Length: 290
Image (cartoon, rainbow, N blue to C red; front, side):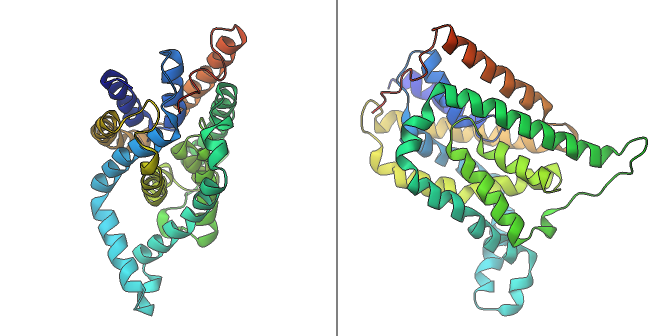
């Protein structure tokens, strides 16, 4: 992998990690469209450490408060009813599904799941799901001629059941094209949470899974055509770009809907199917990353 490739892929990772459009799919598609080798699941996981570091810094006050309360709850029973302490436990519980499935499906994640036709399918299907979830949220928030405005849940109302459902939604993102934020935000909206609450918990929930995945894949870094230098460079680029995207996205969702992302996902999925059907793209294009 050249330094130019690593810069572009780091830029793509930072731009797409927090938006509900799937960073892993876009890394895969960038390589296919540019006729580069697929950077591979290991490269994707390691560069995500950069974007998750951006999450740690952006949400540093929330994270410090949650970790502190959670640690105290280990020895103080009364602290276990504290919202921040509960949030710590719920993040741990919600991380279990992706941990189990990530190890179980490792071979599929690095192989069959990276097929472009599968990616196109997940882009479209999850785009429709996000669109439905967003429409339901908008209906509750805006009300209507014959419908009163309905209050949506905040993170203070997050339960163990909902935390596990969030976790299952996050695990779906092991398939490129689903999108970690897209799946968890959709799940949150369908469960009745506000856009801001769904996005905030999505980002917090991703921290243990992404960091663990990145560390786990460190042993595969430098193998094949992807060397350590470009991987680290791409990770640094992803960090700076990712931080800017988080700041923008958290402001965006307070007043805007997710429909632009829904339309983009569906159109991109259709484009991939057209290009594959026309023989312009091989569904396994650039898949011999090694």
